[in-house]
Image 1 (cartoon, chains in turn brown, green):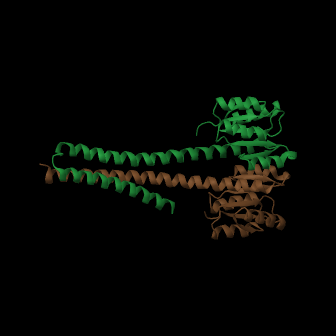
Image 2 (image 1 turned 90 degrees about the horizontal axis):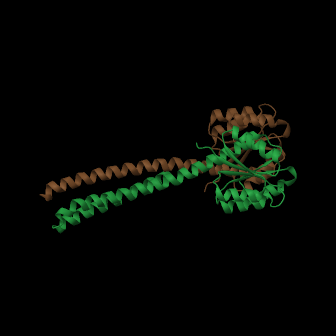
Image 3 (image 1 turned 180 degrees about the vertical axis):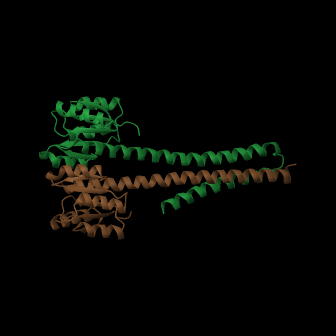
Amino acid sequence: MEKASVLIVDDEAIMRESLSAWLEEEGFAVHAEAEALAAIHYVEEHPVDVAVVDIKMPGMDGVTLLKKLHELRQDLPVVMITAHATVENAIQSMKEGAYDYLMKPFPPEKLTNVIRRIVEHRRLLEENIRLRKERKQVLHIAITALVTLVVLLVAAYFLFGR
Amino acid sequence: MEKGRVLVVDDEEVMRESLRAWLEDEGFEVATAEDALKALAMAKEQHFDVAVVDIRMPGMDGIVLQKKLREAQADLPVVIITAHATVETAVQAMREGAYDYLMKPFPPEKLTNVIRRVMEHRSLTVENVRLRKERRNIIVMSVLAFVGLAALLVAPRAGSLSMALYFLFLACLAGVVIVLGAQLSAARGRS
């Protein structure tokens, strides 16, 4: 299976690097950006499965970035990272459509768990769309074959049956 | 979507009742248990979509309980509630199959969000199983319909061997076309 790609946006280098290292070890393809505008450019040009965004950043904050990312890709799951003081903002971001939020400090397993759930959910959604399409196609094929069979049978009846 | 059924297990009455009130307000059906044994008895008798379990309880703790709950209901997602001091245990619980954990104090919106995700995941899984079954049923029913139709038309003219073989050939051909067509569309969908 192709590696799920994760975008980390955090102005703290230590956080960016430690999360990148952890997630790469867990089997994800990771790209990290230090600020919001660079993250927007990255999403414009690359496929991203999950974005992990720190709420408190200089310049554009995480909640504004969340909205901008959803303007670009409405279905992009965004996980917010927050300090205790910004929990209210995190709840606000959930109302704005964030997938989840994690409060610092969090064990990295928690982030892995959230990302795995997102990837699994997307897989289920894609499978659902594919199965619906297949059901429609199978029904179409069955009806076409049935009509063809009836036509052939009627033709055979007139040709040999009498 | 149908109302989710939530089992809340916590020995602290204030926590239990406040979670019940919040979740009921959010549209879930809630049952509560004050200890692990009662929760297990309930899980054996009733269906739940998700269990919310406090990690620290007298007698059987949340970790042991989550395993026992899944013995009672194989695919029951369990969300663990933990205090800061027991985060390591909560991470361990996740490794052992808990769906997620929440650290006290948590805003109730966070719990609603987790439960909604569980419900979405569950309804997608159930729908996909149903769709797979439906696809298989369409194929089986179509092949049966072709063979039946051909047999019905062949029966009165069974005197002619070449006719019987011709009809049988058509029915088999139709069956092969349907099965191959279905597999082809499945392969195309996956690629």
